[in-house]
Length: 136
Image (tube, rainbow, N blue to C red; front, side, top):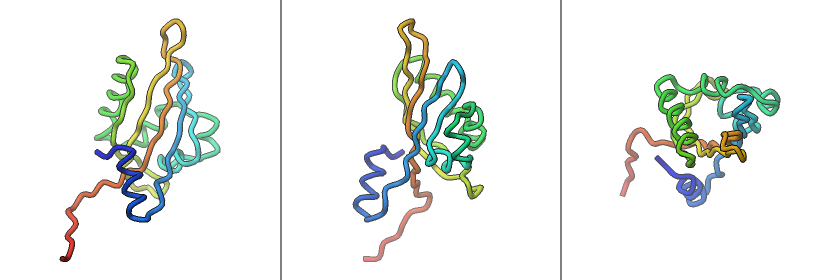
């Protein structure tokens, strides 16, 4: 799993454009997740609708079925333990293909100690599945 710094370093050293990072804010009590256009594109959703807010289940439904339970547990554990999370998983993009992304998030509590916001970023992660062979 690559950290955000590694993803950005690879983009910088290879001359590639850095990946489009998606931002979100989840109003936990209302169960409304607000996302920017980059996050909507990563999850294959309409940017105009995503910016106005959707239930988190709409996003989880776009996560590969094999990755969904692990991601849900990571988010829950992050909220319960009051610590940041990082998880790599696959999502269905606008082209109908699964792509790897890495999400970073953290919950915030009100004065009573209740979780009220969960904010984060999601970065496309280029996971190499077959070894590259370099000629010498």
